[in-house]
Length: 163
Image 1 (tube, helix red, strand yellow):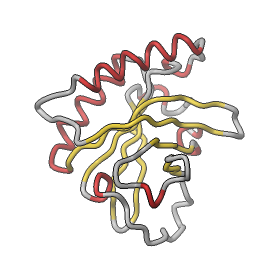
Image 2 (cartoon, helix red, strand yellow; image 1 turned 180 degrees about the vertical axis):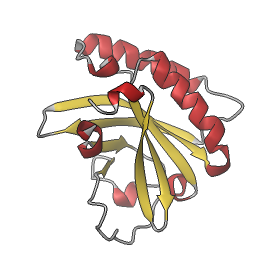
Image 3 (cartoon, one colour; image 1 turned 90 degrees about the horizontal axis):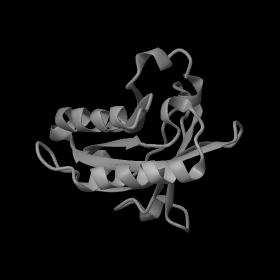
Image 4 (cartoon, helix red, strand yellow; image 1 turned 30 degrees about the vertical axis):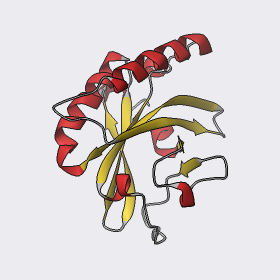
């Protein structure tokens, strides 16, 4: 499970996040120790007033796949995201990627924003996508008590201990 806890996320062209993003439009999010005091940050409305899920179709269940196969799987995931409708429709979605420079891996994927009141329905939809693409877990971002929190949501609980 450590691989999930230490990964850094890059989110590309996040609506409303220009001031927090790098010059090339990437918003980087990295975990901090639980005892750290978060810096005051004006988070984009999609984070501050909603919930954001991040997922990929790459490397199902942690098995490294050829780049072309990962691109094809993510293309299909993008089509599924574009088709998302009721019971809840995403407020926005964008390309994202997770990586760990020390471990030498990167997985491209997507982040999907929903209104807070749609969180329960959205979670069901996103978890179904993660299951469809054989993913072990997804991330959920929520603004809680003055900080943006990243939660690992396990699609496959057996991966939680081996992760």
